[in-house]
Amino acid sequence: MADIKKLAPKILKWEGGFVNDPVDQGGVTNKGITLITFRDVFGQDKTVDDLKNISDDAWMKVLKKFYWDRWKADEIENQSVANILVDWVWGSGKWGVIIPQRVLDVPQDGIVGVKTIQALNRCDQEDLFNKIVEERKLFLYDIVRRKPAQIRFFKGWINRLNDYKYSD
Image (cartoon, rainbow, N blue to C red; front, side, top):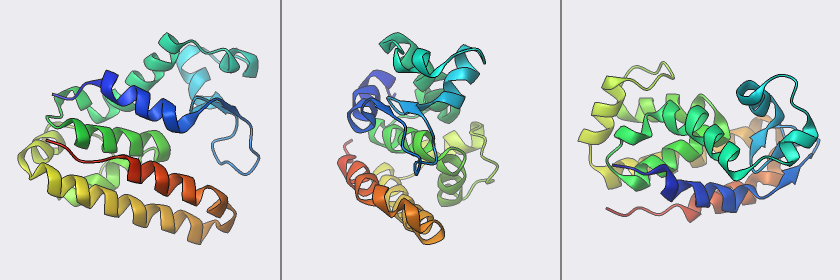
């Protein structure tokens, strides 16, 4: 089964530290966590300074509650597949579930349930991984097509995606 502790360093590698880029649709972030998500987890009274000072334990709590558990990744048998799926939902929200559900030919409701996990674990894992990578690339191209200002992030998005490799 997949292990969140194997994914966490990879996400942190690509997210870095505090960012407040007005072009970034995520708004104020630290270690990839938006202020909105931070407040959803820790309370609406939390400030930008609180986000700047997020502890590693608090960061891991957010990763697990909002992203890992959203994919029920503890039930995913292949670590590479879990990594690519959780990273996608981390970066793109519901689309990181809906598009993979389309690939799996299960209802595209954005909710990972028994049917989604069963379909995921039953299919050829390497083939699924490769399909997810291709669908995510198309998704990233579409973001830039719809919102040209996002082109400044595109190379980083593709580099991040290419950093994920399949292994049994």
